[in-house]
Image (cartoon, rainbow, N blue to C red; front, side, top):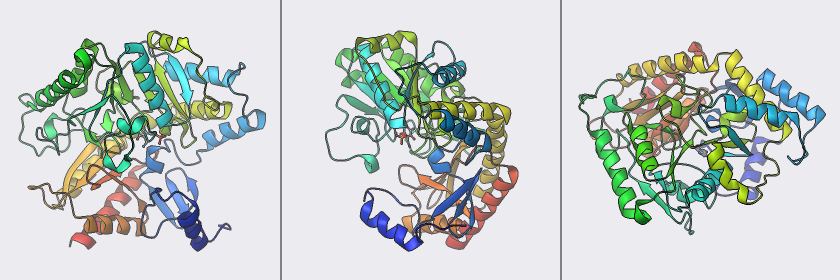
Length: 454
Ligand code: PMP
């Protein structure tokens, strides 16, 4: 039973006391009172299926009992000392986390968010290579700090201040919106949606985008040297954009050949979400030099990390580096429980199985509506791009998009929105959803699209 501040008072405080730059989902925002696994409950007790998981953050389920118990247990014993003393939790967790990472990725820096992790990774890449210039992809989101606003290549998230000096964006290898490519040449796609006539063996999209990257490196870098190359394996905020097959592999080779380091931003794609692999980079057959993570790592608890090789980590030895809350005992206890749950409850396998089923059902829905332009994704990281029609691929008009979205909410489904034009529905639920949840989602989406589009 909800006994807190009234809905009206909450709205009033939000309008007057909180940041005006804070976005609020829905015309009549939902006031969330409680969460249980894949479901959220509002102040009136109405249940919603949460397909957005606090922007891909709740990984194993809202208030998962085992994670809650681990946090409670730790809170009773010790909250904080900073890491100036030995405490087993951080060491046990560092061991457990690095066991999940391949190769030499064995040194952890704990942070409190994705932005902090990418800030640190950018700093490390520059120190290690001695080169300031850094590359990211257009349409990428890597964080909101003034430092990272340069890497984040979406105007929505950039203020008119000097940010990101020495950062260069290259063409986004987006096979749907970009000039080259089709569905068949996308990397690591669950291949259910074959409506493109391009032959993957003869497709030149990857060559063309790599050419653009090469060109970018040539014209903008001092003596063609590069510091770091940042990329997500599938763009999250950017609208579940998947690159042509082998793009990242070839990009990494190019960057390494020019003395740069590759940073895989796993803030959304890590911790089993893609199903086939624990990390997004593994699904691309690549080995980054630095990996950044946050969000799903703590199932909603604020925590993040940078993991790198001992060789890269060495450069951080020239000064002390300190983070008051990074790696605090409660965060580490939570992180450790999340890893246990992923294993014990076969969460990654669930992402693989349910993700394939979800994509298959969405592809079925696409055949019913011409306003669904593209269904893409992998595991439980799915995007549905809405268009005026499939031929023009013009983004669906804002009113129709908003009406469909509002209607899904009214019918108990919370779904994300994003992409270059804000016309991609983003489906990234807690990774514990089941088949019934998928069927419910498809039914709600079908009804809402039909109601709005006729
Ligand atoms: N990287 C990616 C891929 C993200 O999606 C986000 C957040 N949306 C961040 C970094 C920044 O994370 P945070 O909001 O925790 O700072």
